[in-house]
Length: 253
Length: 344
Image 1 (spheres, each protein chain N blue to C red):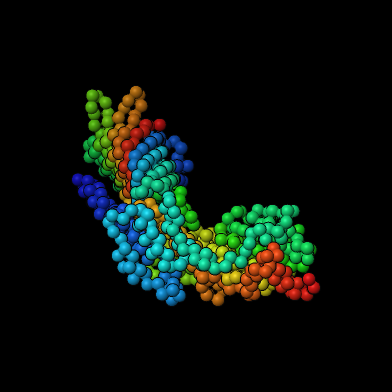
Image 2: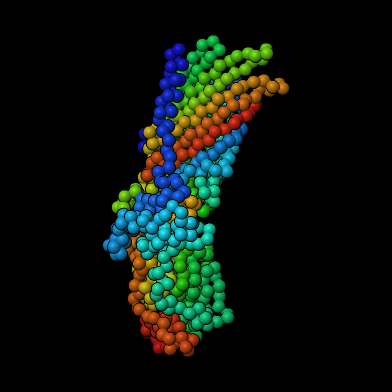
C-alpha cells in the first residue's frame, strides 16, 4: 500500500513543484460552471438511487502550463430525492487534479494528448432521515488515465475549437466503511476494518468526460458544452454511484 | 491515425469498464415489491438472525413465505403496513422499526408486557423541589445521606464537566443511587461519559462487531471495548444502579459497563436489552426501515440483546405504592447502607 502511495505521489508532486518552479511560463486559465442532473446511490445510506427533484452544480477552475501540464480544482453541490420523494440527500465534493500529457500528436487542426492524472477527492453525502448512518464520507487519491482531443476550425473569420476530454480512474486508494460498520466504531472505538481500500478500474469503474466548444465573443473566449460524470465504486459490500449530465459554460481568464 | 485509434480504444475500454453499479433490491412500489425489499434488506443486513433462531425459533425464510401469502394486489397502505410490521415483529427487537408518515411499526413487548416498576409521581417525590439539574441528570442528597441521581435519557448532551460537578456536590454522601428506569437510550457517547466517572482504571467491558457481508454469519472480528477513567471527578463509594424493563439500547450498554465495576450493584428488574446499534434504510414506497446492524456483547462474549439481569431482583410493592414509597429506591438505600456498613 505504501508503495502504491509513492507511485501516486510521484505523479502528483512533480506537477506541484513545476507550478512553483517556473513562474515565467505562460499559463492558460479558465473557469467553468456546470448545471444539470444528479443521480446518487450509496447503499450505506439507502439501497435506492436518489434522482428525483435533483440538481447538481459544478464550479471548475483549470489551468495549463507548457501545453503538457493541466491542473484543475472543482467543487460540486447536489441535492436529490428518493424514489418515493419523501427524503432528501445532499452531496458535496471537492477535488484537485493534475495531469501530464506525455503523449501528444498534432495532425493539422486535430490534436490529441494523453497521459496520467493525479486526482484527489474529498466529499460527503448526507441523508436527512437516517439515524446512526446519516452520512457517508468519501476520500480517494487516484492515478487516472486522461486524454483530450481538440479540433481547431474557422467560421466567419473567427477561430473556434472543439475539445473532448476524458478521465478514467485507474488505480489508487480510497476510504470506505465496512458493509455494516458504524462511524461510532471507527472513530470512538478506533476499529479499523479494511477501511483503506486498494481502488482500481474494476472496483471503481468510473468515467468523466466533457465536450466543449471554444469560441470568441466580445473580446473574450467562451466555452459551452456538455459535462458528464459517471463515478462508481463497489467495495466492502457497498455500492455507490453518482451520475450527472450537465450543461457547462465558462470563459478564459 | 495511430493516436486516434488509441483514443478510440480508451473510450471503448472505459465504456466497457464503467458497467453500471446499480440497485440490487426490488424497486417496484407494489405490495410484493415492498415486502420483498423489506425482507431482503433485513436478510442481508440484520445482525441477530442466528441468535433469534436459537432463542425464538425464527426461520427468516419461513417468515417470508408465510407473510407473502398475506399480500393481495388491492391492499391499501395501512393493510400493507400491518403485514410488514407483523413480519419484522417476529424478531422481537425494539430496534427494528418501520416508519411511515402515519405510524411507527414496532415490537415493544419487551417492556409493554412487563411490570414497569416505576411510578413517576413517587420517584419525583424523592427529588422534591430543590433538586439540581446538570444536563440530563437530576440529583439531590436524600435525608439518609445517600446521593440520588436520576438519568431519564442519554439523548441530551452530557459532558465530563456536568458529571464531575454533580459527583463533587454529592461527594460527602455515603453511597450513590443511579436511577435509569425508563431511560430508553440515546447516544452511546453520553452513556460512556457517565460510566467513565465510576472507574479508576481502563477495564474491559465487552466486545463489538458488525456485518461485513450479506450472509447471516458474515461478521467482523470482535473488537474489545474498554471503559477508560474520566479525567474529572471519579466516584469511589458504593453505587446502586436501578433498572427496569424500559432500560434499552444505550442504557442497556451503560448497565453493561456498570456491571463490570466492583463497587456497583444492579438492582430492580432485568433491562430491556437492545444491544444492536440500529441503522436506517428504506423500501420503495419510502417507509424507513430501522434494524440492528452492529452487535455489542458483554465481556464474557454473551449476548445482551434480551437484557441484563440485576444483582438484586426487586419489584415494586403495591403496599409501598399506597404509601408513596418507591420499593426499589428504598431497597437501594438498604444495600448502600449495608455496603457502607452504617445503620439507616
